[in-house]
Image 1 (cartoon, rainbow over the protein chains, first blue to last red):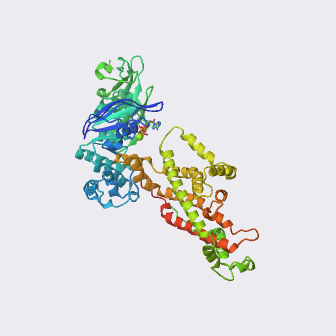
Image 2 (cartoon, rainbow over the protein chains, first blue to last red):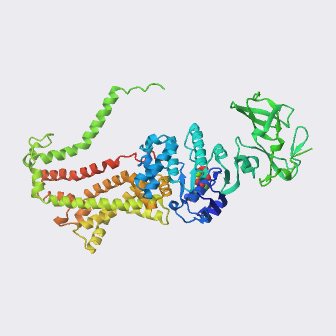
Image 3 (cartoon, rainbow over the protein chains, first blue to last red):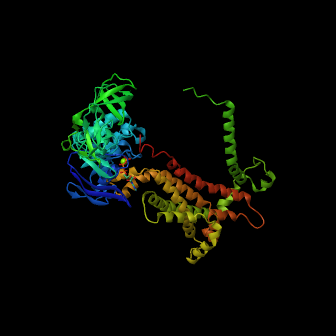
Length: 355
Length: 280
Ligand SMILES: Nc1ncnc2c1ncn2[C@@H]1O[C@H](COP(=O)(O)OP(=O)(O)OP(=O)(O)O)[C@@H](O)[C@H]1O
Ligand SMILES: [Mg+2]
């Protein structure tokens, strides 16, 4: 086990810069999740940690040792590929024990770790099957088993669950969480999935266009996103962002104004922090357009005159029909303000509500 | 879903008739080869186009095997074809892997050059090749044939091998490298076993090409002890007559190594080995 450290790491393909000045220190035993839109460089970053992709600039260290030019096989890091990458010509047990086979461990010694990993993952009945005779979920387990058997310094996952169906994804997510609890090994995990990121991570790294936008615990990112990008990327459904009129801020039905000062240009409100009230009694009046009833929650797509669309997420069921007018109350504590550049304005820098 | 309707019986019969016709069409020359080989010399012209010979004999085979140089021609052909197949496949596998996996300067030029070599009619370059081979003193040797065949088969074989390597996900060797392999170990332990069908196909293709090549063999070899089988066949054509029976018997014998070779590689030709490697 060891900590991973990236110092000013850069990556470019020819003249295209894919990653700029990545500074990231992953503590020993930490579970770090990399998220970001497609093409932002998550896989590239992970592959540089693995050693599969050369580092164009900066330093990468494992346990304080410079690793830039160390080949993958000497980094003692295991990786689970999105495609699983099982060796099709080897049965499950040989797949899982392959790393030991390469290190010339005798067959008798290979058996123990493989059996143990198979037991943890419920793979015992399949040990002598070939990958093509396994279901997607079983293949995914074999891929994890192959990594576990190595007892590496760190695990890397590149969207490991994205090829599974929803139910299986939930199950495997739990399995990975348990695995981390049990092994306590450093893990770096790339995903598109909000829920995976929020539930698994000790810390989340949000990337956009090759730059780190914010690093923080899931709740930090949710409650205090550093900028508009993070605010809209983290949280589901997505945060509503309204443009504020440059002079005087947003006018409420009561005549009060929100965010007239302090250079705020955008106002962010999470759908779950808006409350539906009868028309005329709220901060603003809107028209409900589409209503999605999920049972536990209701998503209400509303349209506010002059302001544009606002999504509201209400708990339980809501007695409302599309086309009906209603009022919305903002949760004052949970409003987010962003300046011209999109950076978040910390709450005490500008009192959101005046009047 | 609606039940799948069974095709009309006439359609089924028609399909089998079509297949039977095709098989007969494709195999008829082969049958004729056997027929002539087994017909006594005296009856060839009297039997004419009768489908079944009126008498059978193994005399043609006997004289080909024991009374001619054919065993030598065979030996030469086997040596040349096997060596060519092995050398070409080895080089093509290495080159195909490089084209498939590495980015390097001049790659496009090398590919373009290799394509270019495939565009000239052989007749155009046969004279220069003769000059070159003569200059290095390899005329009338099996070496000349092995080298020339290898050179001419490499471009196509390389493209063939490249397409097989392209079909193997890159993730697999990366996973192997994470598991502790060097690139070469990953190639040997993971990629190569998966390329066996491709390698077998390439071997088979090159072997057959070398086995039946006539033009270069005719030009570069004029002594009996370095003649290959296709050239040897021509010795049955003399100025005044053609010894059909022996020629066909030799042809039948020539089929044997090819058949054996394909029998040997056919289990590697079975595709589908890579299924299950990736995705669910
Ligand atoms: N070999 C390459 N040459 C040039 N550009 C590349 C190369 N490989 C990747 N890129 C670029 O690098 C960027 C980052 O790619 P990467 O695969 O890391 O994205 P990602 O964040 O993993 O996306 P996704 O979520 O879709 O997997 C992309 O814009 C991609 O076009
Ligand atoms: Mg990716």
